[in-house]
Image 1 (cartoon, rainbow, N blue to C red):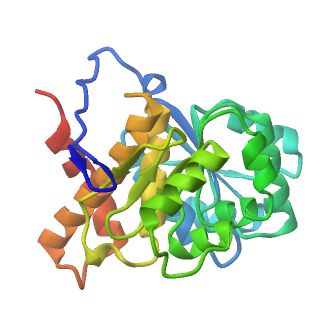
Image 2 (image 1 turned 180 degrees about the horizontal axis):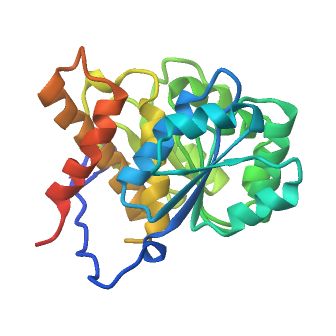
Image 3 (image 1 turned 30 degrees about the vertical axis):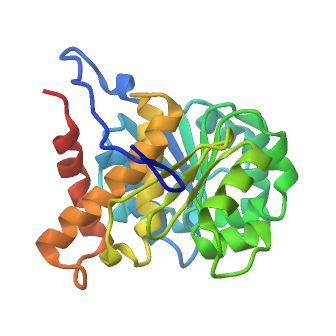
Length: 283
């Protein structure tokens, strides 16, 4: 449906799963995330990736926070302590169908080194969120040189750091479109009526979601859901990205209906992802 500023994001349709399928058929995703003081973000992202239906979810975190994240992620995601040897990290990332970089990662020297090297060395889709965005804002040349699919998921503050624009952004649609065109990436500008801008200039506007989702961790959930859908390769990458945005908002709406906008938590939204997907499953 065409609307002012772009095309309205539509409800996705999930295909039925093959009865004889195994976990390897539903994608392997890798999350580079977490640091001291920021152990919640990787867990929220990992739980959302699991709820998306991804077959295998691996979370790479610094060794000093590994015990905390391993406990908080429970049993559904595999938590891996990052090695000092970059080649081991590269092997993990290359084995994945999609990679998420950034939730709670920090901006230390090692985090920056790993982020930039992975962007240069892997060819699967990569999502940059949170600290992944802050790191790339200082190295836009690395983004420009990357030829594989890259998705950036900033809120307005992060977008301002990427572009040096003023807040509030006067024309979110125009700014998102210009950035996606210039840097050859998919730009998901989060907020009320989240905008997904494509490199060809086309934009999608999302109408699901509510103010109860405006809380810390909501973006981590979106990033995890998105990497999970990209890794499953249910649709083309553009459809996977805009479907993640729609489903994230729909899960938030379901959580608000049950718990209310004031009291709902990000964990409530993540628990509602399967319900949102169930509404979209093809008969």
